[in-house]
Image (cartoon, rainbow, N blue to C red; front, side, top):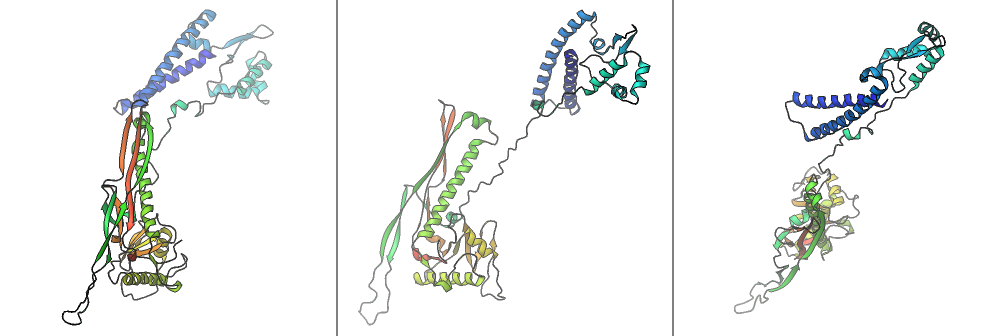
Length: 423
């Protein structure tokens, strides 16, 4: 039984080697690395089978006096009935199952109650023994070959594309005025009192006598840092590169941290709230297009008054829920004094009544602010964030990190106004 199974496995292994070589030859190419590895395994297995087959064949030769393995396996066994007459019992070897459909069909007929007796009478011999042998061959269970038994031949497929979104955008930071932070802080002048120029009542009389006052304010950088320790093996064997992925994800985390800082500066600065309940935004989702228009105009008017007409209001800052609320609204007005504008829901940008619209994930819910983007100072070291790499030969790894210095400030609170309740 073992010799027969090994012989079949050897033949199939040889066929696999020939098929792979023929495929490569038909395509006029060299063997791929995976194919070369498989062929090597097949050849090693073929040699092992051949060695054991030779040993088993020698055992059979000593027993039967023949070296013909095929004949030993496939010869019919002869048995004698009670009268002494000898007859052949095909495939009496318990390790051999049906090799052809004809053998299977004959056994089916032998065990059949209708046709069996007739066939057995023609075969002669012990009909009961032949019927039992046929029944045994039919009931013999074949060994199943499933994907788990040939797992080495099924190579798993791995995707090497990162499907997630890595977003490094900072819309509010990008809208502000960049200032350098080469020394960790930056001092900037703030005008306190402006000189007065008034009508002189008569010759040699005093008129505008108020001089300018200028104070200073300091913007100090805060440091943001992230670090990790990655093995040499992970760096060199990963696809895609785990090192590049780390820096991309760390840069995204830095962007979200600093964007949140800039948004918080706008939210918490001592800036005004437009009008009364009738002239400002209330609960998000309940306002009409007219409410939005009235609130924006009231905000512009408030900034104009607070700055004595020195306003440069150019931006409408919105949280995500406010942006999508405004984008979904329409108007039933057929005529407008100025273009309404358009909003891009994909990038959360656009314009509304001449104002640049900046929507950001960094704002708290229900935030809506109009103001001058030039009055928002964004202090950051040039080239931030900075990637850092340190090789650690003692442990075969890389210590990596990402660092950046950042801060934001509003240098004139009168240039910004909330359009609604800040939650």
